[in-house]
Length: 335
Image (cartoon, rainbow, N blue to C red; front, side, top):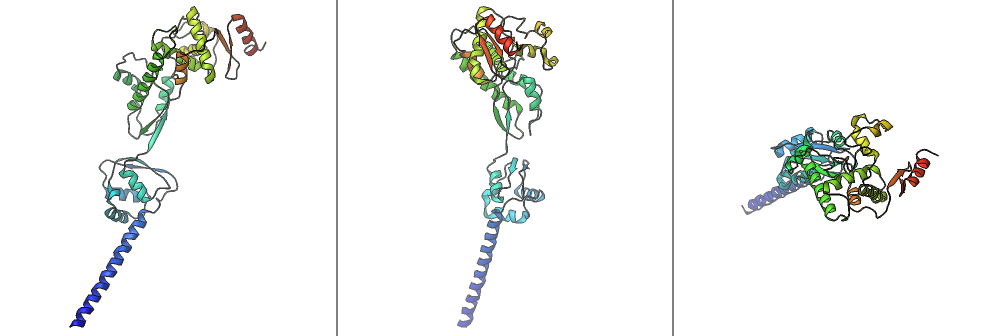
């Protein structure tokens, strides 16, 4: 009887040991499965809809060919419950992702981030054409004015009032939110520049500073020249001289501009033609960079009244009309 009891106990221990070994093998198999690489050779997007269960996510991953066994994934979630928290959103699946890292990415709501760059020197119309192609973001043609109204600006004059920069967003986020951040950033930069400006500027408001900065932005791509360009315009404003700057003519021409300015264009009376109007244009003519704004606030301490392009992106500056005409003959008329 005693031998039978011992035999039963021994048999039971063997069964338990085998069961334990089997459980450990299953446990290790699931852990190994979680460390396997996602089955994709290129980055792909994964859209997890609101209300998706972990069971549904496992089926979705298998259907998209990212994993080969949804059942193993469901069992893995039982031993690693931290990966089973589903957060809706659009995720970027990388070839370097493991099953574990992808599920952790979803659990932490680490959605794919998109970038939107508003380039300095462009107009709202040019930005609008770009924004229509923004990934995973719906376009509203009236969004610029909606941002103005939301910030107490009912002028319906958005030109120049948005800060050119690179902004980040997630799929489905509002274009309004991105542009609102841009508007607020411009207001902050403009206010700071106006409060710190040289006190002898012939300007009466920070909006005038913004207008002049936009003209400076369009006149040169050479960073070191911006303060000199600003000085020319400030000196001309002080003397009551017209600014006579081609970018304002081009802006006033609108769709009619095809790459060249004629003498007729220079004589045309438009609100933006600074060969015909005195002072500044009624609005900015583009989005100025921070450097252009700072140049307008702190122009160089020089007596220049004229400048002409060398046709290489740089300019020759002059204090007299005679010297300016010589530079024009040399660089523009090839005399």
